[in-house]
Amino acid sequence: MELIKAACTVGIFTLLSRFSGYCREITIAYCLGAGVYADAFFVALKLANTLRRVFAEGAFAASFLPRFSKILVRDGKEKANGTLANVFTVMLGIIGVFSLIVLVFFPEVLSVLVSGFDESSYKFALTVKLGRICFPYLLLVSITSLFAGVLNTVDRFAWASGVHCILSVFIICGIIASYWLGSSHEQIVFVASICVVLAGILQVAILYINVMQHGFRVWISGSCLSPEVKDILKHMLPGIFAAGIWQFNLVIDMTVCSYFPSGTITCINLADRLNQFPLGTLGVALGTALLPILSKAIAVEDFKAVNREMHKGLLFSMFITLYATVLLAAISVPCVATAFQRGAFGGEQVIITAAAVEGFAIGLPFYVLAKVFSTLFFAAGDTKRPVFIGVASVLVNIVCLIVLPPFLKYFGLALCSAIAAMVNAVLLICIAMRRFSLQFSTEFYCKFLCQCIAAVITFFILKLQAYYIWDNSYGTSHIKWIVVAYLFVSGALIFFAITTVGLLFTKQKQWKLWRKDAW
Image (cartoon, rainbow, N blue to C red):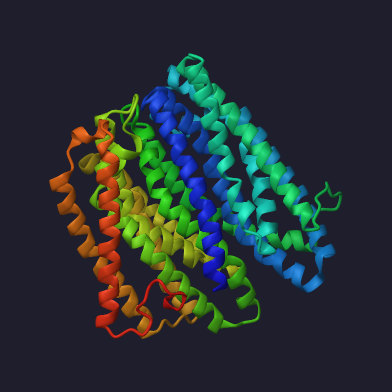
């Protein structure tokens, strides 16, 4: 149960992070609505966050963690500490120089990323100013990811996952304080941008204290290009490309959104926020927990352990992910209205956001599957295959963005990402099954089939219930909380009951889903 315990630890703190992010989006929607100021802030923050996922959470984690873990086990803490200092020095130099270059040429970078913005407009100028304030967060969060990787290696997941809440808390406090003081919308987004950098500084400080408590230190190393660092960088480059390809999909989405009316970027971002609850809790948590476990198993060529951990991880994640997919797809309007409809965020924005939520929900299981199976490749030190798979997903996304949005509008924008995730996940699964000789049991397939059947039935029941008991006027009333709570609980009970009946019908021994051995 090491995997499930680790995944639950990371999942709880990641869920807390996602909840704080949700509170942040509520605050922005309430104070700014969906318009010029919210769009400008979201674009400024998203640029730093997108590159963070490429350099810090994506390629770096995949390359650093398995090798650092191996050095720590094989050569001891002193050798691992020297490698940590060398990596810290190289990261500081590379990302620091990169950040300076981007800051200097920020208007040119932005004119490519959001080409739908008029470069002579106030909206474009505001986005440039906010982006230059937010962008140093990339360097700070990259250092945070380095320290988090060290803590994960020694099986300390809580603080590494928990510090991500700090960013949202700082932004919320800054926006609320500015709003209560009667500041203009422009002043509010400037304060929010400054809070982004302050949050990054505090995240670095907290994790470094935890790293020191486990006997590690960092310093600027004069001879940082050691063989170990060169090996990490060598495997990191294809990982950057692989992670960059997937994030490129999100950048393309943002570019297309910039051609839609003002407020579209905000609505799509809010839709993605709801999607991030299950994705962040399960996909990120399970991937984080799996990486050190699979790395150790693959290092000693224990492929039975690889099969066993993948079996547990997939069943556990898909059970919750499928219900989350059903919930978001079946009752998207009630969910969005309950989550965001208040203040400056009205009914029209709810409809737009709900359409995007449905599109994202379709891809949710595939996002999680891709995260789990890509972790398997990263644990084996194989960062090349995901590159070619990522190229295919980008091409699919581009084709879909040309074809779907003109006909399906906001739903089509989100659906493009879902289809790309589907292609990405299917290819990863097919290659991984052959590459790692994965052989899932008949029991596994029966349990997964029961989950899928339960998901389909639950979807139609929830859709029917929502049709009869939801009214759009509830969006401005407190009754919406009661309705959505009822739909959530009733759907969960139905999904759980149908899955259990399916397991009994197929005569599975571990049919009691509340027991540990069921997974």
